[in-house]
Length: 280
Ligand code: PLP
Image (cartoon, rainbow, N blue to C red; front, side):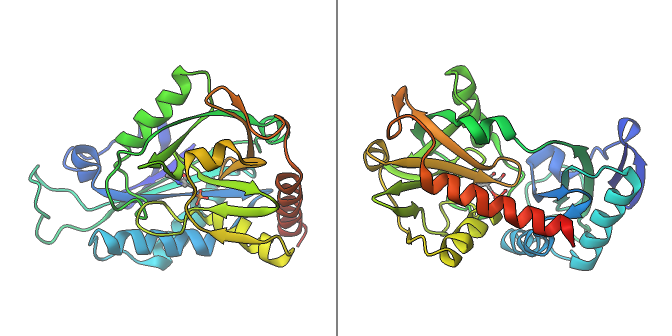
């Protein structure tokens, strides 16, 4: 497996990380995960744009969008993986450990790929989720390498026999530990607005586009954990989890406990997008 680190393509298992890399000390950087289906990038431009925006938000300077795109293509080609996910991270640079930004450091890019399949089984049957308080910082719209809170939140799910933790701030559902959360109530789709309290997922945006194109009414509006407990349907989205139905939250059934019709429709529209992508 070939990865990219700090200007070089290297054998993944032999890759050496620089000791002064600020990603290593501080998680001082941003990242993206991009899906490939049958050798083709899905929503590559959107991911590249978001990476540039995240970098800008945390004042990482000197990142070139074209370079990002080139590295992602190169990693895909060199590894010959057709179905999988590419990971790319950009740290602020290499310097002795000091919180303040180092003078004149250049961003350090790391990229790798791994093969993965679509999560067919969970998309079909749905998963269990648990809820907990969202105690992250107030720049959740930045796809930051700092994922300690998200890691802790996900582990809460693992330890409770669930697949995802749905977080709330003062009772209002924000998002999952690594996903965006939607609910359907009386035929209307609800999801948290794209402000500083959530990551504006590329899959979230695709789902809203699909809802728009297919006349499914939607509102980008906060809803509470209590609203969610009375929802007809709940699902979450991400690049790797696609549209995953949630059929049980905190041990209680969502709706009648089976995957709902709106979720199924959106999944089939999403499938169509992928089929179109790989048939051109
Ligand atoms: N929210 C968080 C906190 C995430 O980490 C992710 C992705 O990993 C998402 C939402 C979903 O974003 P996307 O659909 O762009 O993968």
